[in-house]
Image (cartoon, rainbow, N blue to C red; front, top):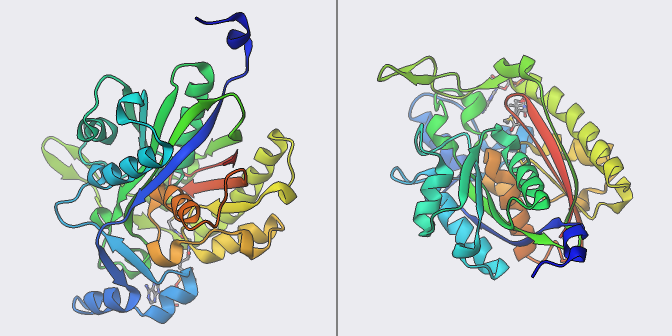
Length: 333
Ligand code: ACO
């Protein structure tokens, strides 16, 4: 029976468990460079490491889709949370590389999990997708619209890379990361903030589309790296400070910073601006490359499972990507 005190008690959301999955094929920079050289595309381990910090990435098998990567990540998060798939009442998948035009990757994942009935939809905010999805799930849980949500970032970016363009194809990888977010009487998610600025659509895009049974336009990723770099560094500091203020915290309260894993120079620049020692920066970009919406939950799960991040610690998640989109979530684990 619902009592009047439970009706008025504040309702928060908290991460109950994390999970992730990386496809089997792992390519070091040297291996990728050797493959590209066969098509006359020149690059080197030295250039990639120096400019980006990336040393290796994983690529999905030809028959593996984003929902295939999302499934083991979701199962691992459910197991860590001690939650059965049947208890989930909301699935949000953040992806820019969905299995199909429709239905959503979230619906395909729901089917693969063997459950039915709960709300399931995709969020498209490119590399900010996971912080967007987490913020939406938090709001739905706080409002009472959901109680236990699976929030997943899953990407097969290898499918939209132009392997003739060395300025982009060395940067990205495939993978999936997941969290189970549940209703809680004590706050897990402390504050969040999301932004977008569509004036910068052109600096990072995959402008192709399916129309009349044909692929129209350019269906591969295009990026103005330097423009993205400049915008990313500026917005990441600003949004982190805004979220700290919302939560009545300061940068000294951050135990761990998990920025979108795009480029070590952007990540270290953000940590420095927030006056955080680099030891507080969670880094997986070296091993995963940029996995877009999957990069933050992949890094979070790696840090939780290795014992780097412990229960009760305060974590700042920060996304930035195409759109242009950006956002941050501050949470107590
Ligand atoms: N291997 C070897 N040489 C290369 C490669 C490569 N893979 N790519 C570019 N070069 C060459 C260029 O041709 C250029 O040669 P030139 O001087 O003879 O013309 C030289 O390297 C320098 O190129 P720049 O583009 O100026 O290199 P820059 O230092 O800007 O680094 C990079 C490029 C790594 C993309 C950088 O701009 C960057 O990190 N931008 C941020 C973008 C990012 O991380 N995007 C990820 C997606 S967005 C997101 O997730 C937020």
